[in-house]
Length: 229
Image 1 (cartoon, rainbow, N blue to C red):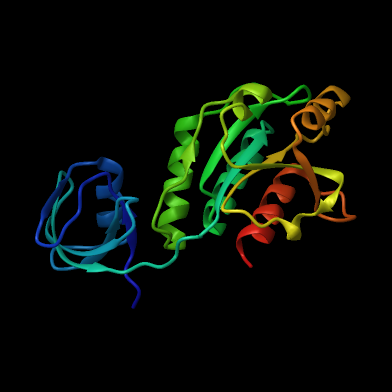
Image 2: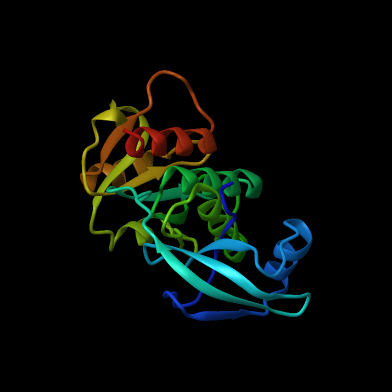
């Protein structure tokens, strides 16, 4: 049976004992999964490996685990994909973070564009969603989630290859680079001023084809076409 897998912000190595007092984790282990002393779980900290650990103690107040062995995990994309997503409705943005994390996105950069429906997000909740999706999908890293920034500010220091999702670009399937920034607009699309900005910065347009997709669908489909080759 596959062991349950959990992110933990600790240095992990064989033989080390890990004491946990986080109420949410303790509740998951004890009440949701009904684990007890002697049971095993998989732990990871985002640094590239999984570790099998056994519970020595598991109570409502604390858990003590010992790390038994390191497990090689090859579930890491070779392409570093950054999602620059215009802020959309909360539930839809959370769906993007969840599903694109599962697919293998490296980081999420919420951007404020001229037609953004709102200007802020609960970044802490997005981080939690990305951790849970990383646990579920057995990826070795947890994506970074940045604070919202204006479009130009978010892009100015990015050192990879930038592409903007639009209707008039070449097929997204043709993208081939090690570090990619995919820029996705809001439901209302890009303004003419923003399209002019992309041209002045020589940011290439890419397309998903003929269907007109919602922003969250476009982000998920675009990520899959880039990463799941």
